[in-house]
Image (cartoon, rainbow, N blue to C red; front, top):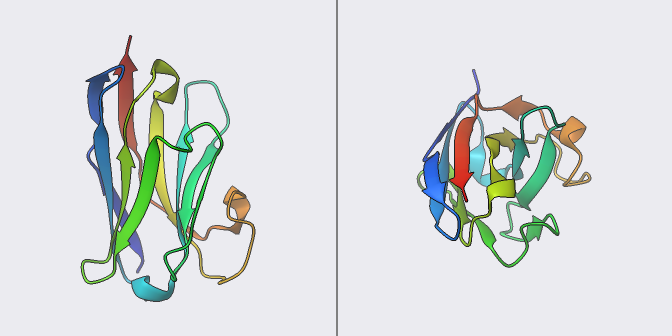
Length: 124
């Protein structure tokens, strides 16, 4: 049984930082592409960042230069370091795992497993 458990969300002022974690179990983590998505209130879920098993990363334009995705295969954990946060970053952030090695990184339909989400609120 695959489980993805996010943590690290919270309330932060604009310009601040947060680090999200996603602990994975029940899958061969080190060889799985992983992604972060977010969903703001009354909006569709959108792509944030992706990391391949090789460590190659991809980012949405809206977070490029501010967010960093990384992974620790020894801990079966993927991270999202978020700096220079803006009120528009407010959303529920979801971790996702993909079984296919090659697919569009920013398409949520390509992901097979999802965490329950963690709330990030950025105040102005």
